Figure (spheres, one colour):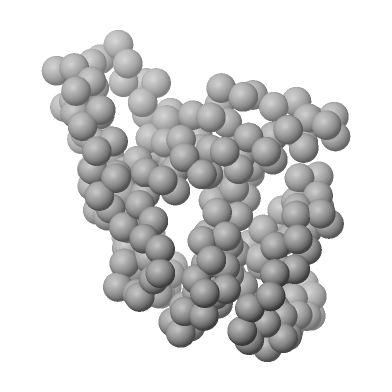
Amino acid sequence: MGLNEYLLGLNNLEKIIRAPGFFKHTEHTVAAHSFRVASIAQVLGDIEEANGQAIDWKLLYEKSLNHDYTERFIGDIKTPVKYANKELRGMLHTVEEKMTDEFINQEIPEEFQEIYRRRLFEGKDDTIEGELLAIADKVDLLYESFDEISKNNPEKVYREMFIESILTIKEFDHRPSVNYFFDFIFPELLNQEFFGKEEFLADISAALQRKKRTN
């Protein structure tokens, strides 16, 4: 028993396509997503530090790099299925946790098992690093879906992903990095010209107004 199976799993992540079942102009793998999330988390961490927040960089990198490693066991579930209801989401999470636990027990040397339990189990928690992971994950989904929207992809799911990402990121508006994102980064993203932009911006505005009314 060594770390060979863990390293082999990295190859598996290169073969798992995100948002399966939908037409897309650009295919994205879970491996590429994990790298982008780590890079985005790094940007968010820089902004937090510039605003006086202490960041545990080792923990942040561990969380962001490994957050989707367990998808090697069950793949990337089609988004409407994954979020159909809380019960189904909970069932999928339970299966994933059990398979991860079995993997660690069987494939990770005992002296490293606690380390990999920390790395491979749910990283989104109430710590600053856990919150930055949750934000970075949605920022990447936002950019991924925007790429399809700006290329006039007819699949409605990308607009739904984009708006859902905005609303989720907004839930962390107590974080300086989120305020910076919406003040300086997000406007630049939307500054591009593409077919249907006016309608798209109206959809975003309506979604944000609905969220304000429900808060």
